[in-house]
Structures are given as C-alpha cells and as structure tokens.
Length: 151
Image: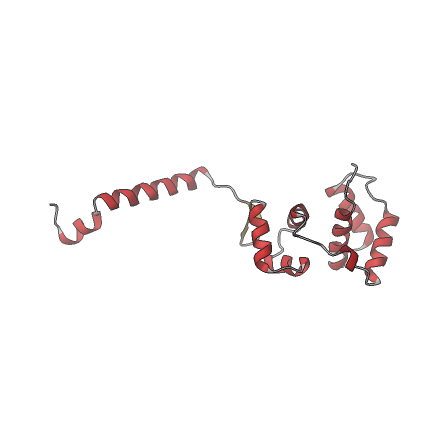
C-alpha cells in the first residue's frame, strides 16, 4: 500500500515509542494492522525510534486539528484509552478530544470508544416517550388520578 503522507506512520511509531513498545513490535503492528507489508522496513523504524530516544520528537508532534483519522487510528488501536489520556497524548484540551471523537461518530462508554449507533429498540423507546409526553400535554393523566376530576 502506497502511503501519501508518511507522517501517519511516524505518528504511530511515536505513539508506540511513548507506550514503551519495542521496535519489532511497533513495526509488526504497523505493517500488519494498519498498512501492508513493505510500507516501512524495520531499519527505518529503528532510525525513528533512535530519533525519538534522542529527544527529536518536536518535528513529529501530532496535530489533531489537521488529522482526525490519526485520532481514529489511535482509538481503534487501544480502546481502553480515556479521553483524558488521549488529550495528554495529543497535547490538547480534553474538550477538543471529545469534539473530535463526536465528529468521528465515536462515543465514550465505560471501557472505550464505540461507534454511535442507535438500536431499533432505543429508537422505539424514544418514539414512545415523545408520544406519551404529547398525550400528557393534551390531557394531563396525572391530574385526573390525583384529584379524581374527569371533567
């Protein structure tokens, strides 16, 4: 697979470096899970890890404002990350992460981010609830029960 923007690969490696992964594990994960074999070789991974180790990460800082897809890759790579952890990783405010996740149609649920989809039963519940509210506005059922006034 040809990658037009190699900074995506570098961002993934920086993320793996900060998570204290080994070069081989990072290379294998990138080559098998995110891109195809041959996208990056192990020697290039070793060079970038050496740059990160020497402190040369300023050129590779992740800009979430420019690339929502990078956030999506990170979230799908490790769904246990909290929004606070993501905010710290991307060096942005917590609300920025929440907003970008919402733009990506991801919602935070107890253990991770998931696609935001309503089930049929949930849609039916919302419809029933709104119908009951409208009926109650037209003829207040609760008032009839409390006062026994049916007029």
